[in-house]
Structures are given as C-alpha cells and as structure tokens.
Image (cartoon, rainbow, N blue to C red; front, side):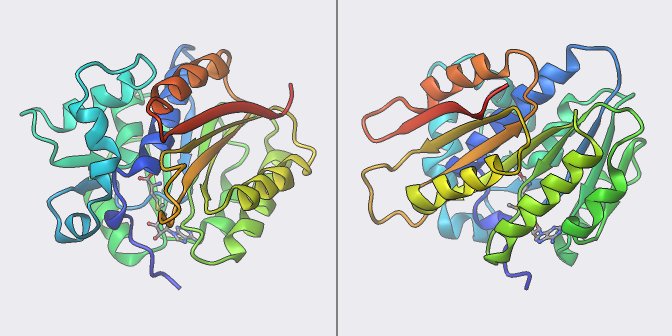
Length: 276
Ligand SMILES: C[S@@+](CC[C@H](N)C(=O)[O-])C[C@H]1O[C@@H](n2cnc3c(N)ncnc32)[C@H](O)[C@@H]1O
C-alpha cells in the first residue's frame, strides 16, 4: 500500500523537528574532514512547492514552519534549518519547503555521498529529476526495509541513516526496530536518526522502550508536542530517536527543545533513553 504522500504534510511541526535534528546532526559530522555517507531510507520527493493544491488543502505548514519563518528572531538551534529555508526562498516569500534530501544536498561536501530510497513511483521520479545525475548521489526505487542492509557498513565507515517511514501500516513499527537492530549489528558506529509519530503518549513511550530493549547503547530522544492541550489533533506530536549522537548533539538538542517548547501549549523534551 502506497497511499502516503508527503506533500500533504510538508513543513508541518513534525518536519520542523525532524529537519532541525537532521541539520544539527549533519553539521556535527561536517566538523571532521573525513568524508561520510548520508542514507535516507524513505526520501520522499525531495522538495515541496507549498502552493501545490495538496499542500494548500491541509495547510499543515502554517502551524509548522510558517510560525518560525515569520518569527522575528530564531534560536541558534533552528538557525541552520532557517538558513537552508532562506536559500530555497531567496525572495523572502515562503514558497518551497526542502525535504530531507534537499537539506542534505545543501550541507554535504563534494567528497560526501548520498543514498536515497523511495518506493512511490511518482516521488521516486521527482527525486530522479531533482537529484539524479549528480556525482555522489544514488537513488533507488526499493523497499528500504529490505535494502538498507546492502549499504551498511558503508565504505567510509562514517555516516548518518535517516529512517522516516509513513507508519500508515502498523507493521512499519516492527520493521523499523528489526531494520535498526540489523543495521546496528553490521555497523555499530553509524548514526541512526529515527522519526516516529506521537499518536498517544503511551504508544510513543512503548515504542521508545521497544527500541531501548534491543540492547543498542547510546539512544537519545527528543519529543515535540505542539498541541499538548488539543485533544482534537490527530497527530499529537512526534519524536526523533538518535542512536550514536555525535559529540555535543545532546546540548544542541536541549537548545532546540527550548526553542520549540516555547508557548503555553507546546512541550518539547530531550532525554537519554539508553545512556552512554
Ligand atoms: C514521511 S515521507 C518521507 C519524507 C522525507 N524523509 C523528508 O523528510 O522530506 C515517507 C516516504 O516513504 C515512502 N515509502 C513508504 N514505504 C516505503 C518503503 N518500504 N521503502 C521506501 N520508501 C517507502 C513514501 O512513499 C514516502 O514518500
């Protein structure tokens, strides 16, 4: 089943959290000269026009990135994402929202590599048109859950894997845990970033505990619930679980949590779910 299209959700609060964590993580890896690989297991279309009727229908970006776009001052933890957003929207009008492959393309150096998996034929085609043909970029229309193992450990032995499935199928939760456990067995030093929805606080807590029970050490977690008092919201919020966070990422995420958690109804917290 491939019902999910990210254009309906581009730039929403979950993307703000995911992409802020992604930019801070990539920046941390860029501090060392040694090249690395960025693997995006569920890459989406790469870049989203916010005037597309599908994005306009839900207008989720209005309570997401538009809030920060219009804010007079942005926290240092959000600054790298906002820099990319400004580069994508140079005339000052928020028209394009960068997906994870665009964010990586802004930050990676010529010596770094990018591997993108996307199963949906239309989004795969958009990715190929936008990102294909560039040196160091590989795009595959494959089932990420089966394919990741072919890429780890990478030849560079350094890198980040972003895992961002739609979770429309309940089986995605178990598949994610299985995929991470397998990839970590092959590549224990890789940085893994996993996005997950918070549909209920209890369900999210159980999912995080399931990941902790894999025995994989060094799991850091940030959860952002922008509508904590809004029982009507169908997505309460979301989380990012980071395995092997780079040096000082926990402090950067604490700053991010402060910025995102501002306001009476918002809540954002960082915690080690499995310590160092
Ligand atoms: C949440 S979106 C990705 C958004 C993107 N990572 C970003 O941050 O801009 C999830 C994507 O996964 C794709 N997808 C669903 N199942 C997949 C699978 N088994 N393997 C690879 N891609 C899949 C969907 O078509 C969708 O485009």
